[in-house]
Length: 268
Image (tube, rainbow, N blue to C red; front, side, top):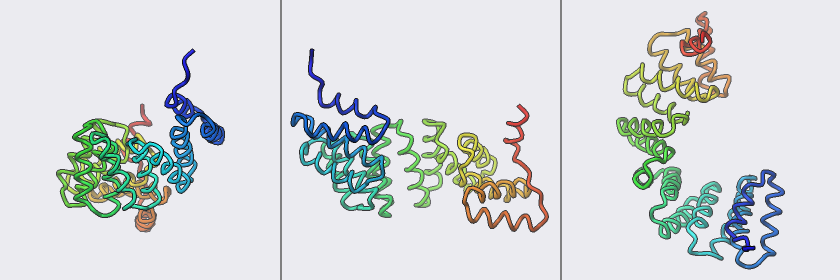
């Protein structure tokens, strides 16, 4: 009977749903043969990250990168943990090490883009996102983030193209539909904006930014009853501007009306 490989052992631990049990499983790996130690620390780091112990996750991934310095996944996980700890320069250093070891890792390029984006380096973020989409054209989240970076640089057409790519790849990506709606609205395409917001809300009915964007678009079209309904929904979901605008419209003695896409759903 063949021995279980350390990698297989690690993957088996990922299937344990109870996090304390999963943690105990990986901690026990530190008492096994040395070949298991880096995999055990990786599992400990993964589990701590899920539990919200970001500092603990970082410490575990440092152990992994010390034990297996040629493992790009260890450096990437370390970079992601440092990003989540808001240690942005250190995150970039770790992610760049992952890219040095695995230059065609699209996820690593995407993560580098996220960190640069958070630093305010929009050109660097755009380059990294584009690199990710070139390596893996099917990485929807990279297209979505690329749309954000382009839009923040005033490239409205480029932003729309990226958002459209994102939703073509993953039609269930509600935030991308919503931001596509924003871009279409900014371009003056009210009908296209409404269609995009509706897609987002069919997927995620509690997505406040889509309700707010839909309300703004209806307001531009002077459909004030639908406008009030959308602002009310956004306000109930925590959007303070939506709540304020809903109060203003209610003060004008306007009665809310459910948008047509909801009425159509009810009539089916």
